[in-house]
Length: 551
Image 1 (cartoon, rainbow, N blue to C red):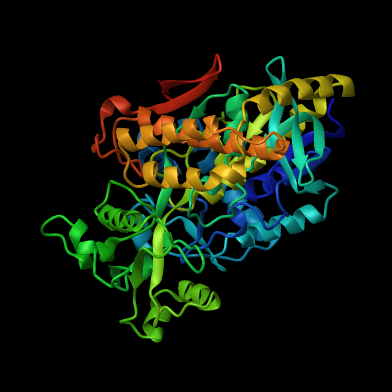
Image 2 (image 1 turned 90 degrees about the vertical axis):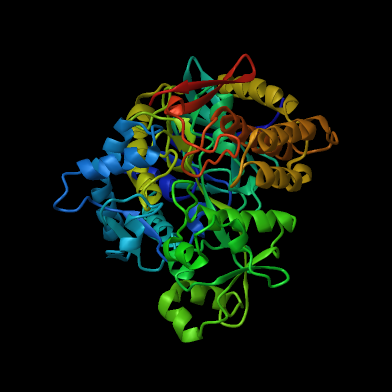
């Protein structure tokens, strides 16, 4: 029998980003005994800790002249038939108050009418976003951490939660592994799962690589429906010396997109009659097949893959502009690169296609609860609110809105729940880990490079039946490769989680035989009405079963 350190809690919060922190604050305010399990160091892991863009924003209250109906309609329109109306209503209802909470905690923001954000992929019909003054999402995390430090919330760092404990269709705890491979057994009245997406299984992303799909895998293993997994918010970003989103202000400089030989390449991807200048005048992050700047994304992807998917395949060149011109157009981007040792006025920026946000996840209801009683999910781990596209700034707002909802509801149900005996909790953990270990025959450290190559080649900008089947077959090969017996439990389960997350994305993308938002199938290049709805994947009899559902 394995040895466990047992940790009791009314509410276990899994994760340390913006959604997890907001959930912990809310649960504590409701009087619950709260424990946070953070995979890395609090404040230095997850998307919220590092993401940056020239226009980093959060959606606030609808404009005074709006009833809220317009914002609600924008969310559904962006979702293109894949978003839950009830979740959209909750976001519209609560986002204004959650932004006020952040300001009360000390976050500096500015309201900004930025018309370019309202006519492209950001999908707002009116300006209703707040620009974060620092342009760094970490500013949100900083003020939330400050609030948490003023409470008695227990924060356990360096703990990777690898599996949920369940009994009689309800969550009763979780198993975590520390960096030294020692085991923690959490007995919890309720669990809030908020440990992000699966950025680490892709080669480029503006996040930390510790997010490998643990949240998706754990929910899938628990038998829960995973929806919209094919939808990723992807687009061009710098590949070195730092990985940062390249948003509208940079492209308004009318740069050159060049290969390693210095040859201009964008023109080769444009249809007849469309000029590079026209594309740069509307170019934006993220990628969407709905608008013509898709050709710029596809050019970056095509040249990047021709060069083998490394960091030195295709470049953004603004060296024809003075430093003053660059600073005036994209001041924050200029300073980020200058700090990292790159002078935009004198050096080309290596670019690639990266993953910003995962739009799919475990299906939740308006209470942020899953079909497993007392399990609540929020942030990127949740599914049903983001679909083919999402209005810009909504992801950060969703973390705050549904983090708050999840935390308060978890506190209510967790404080009333009966707690398992230690012996019963250990028995459940032993059975679960025995089964999980047998499903993980390969080392994550050994497979991550190949997994990233597979996901870049098959699950990013251009997809088709061949590329997607190639990803699935590649995952099968990694499973069959075998692994040394001395591998740690943590390494084995990390491998299983990463491979499961990758398969969920590929299987979902293969099932959706049309194109919408950032999901482009070259073999099904248009939107098809019969695919209005969400791809749902659930573990049934040990296999991934695919269905289409209306949210």
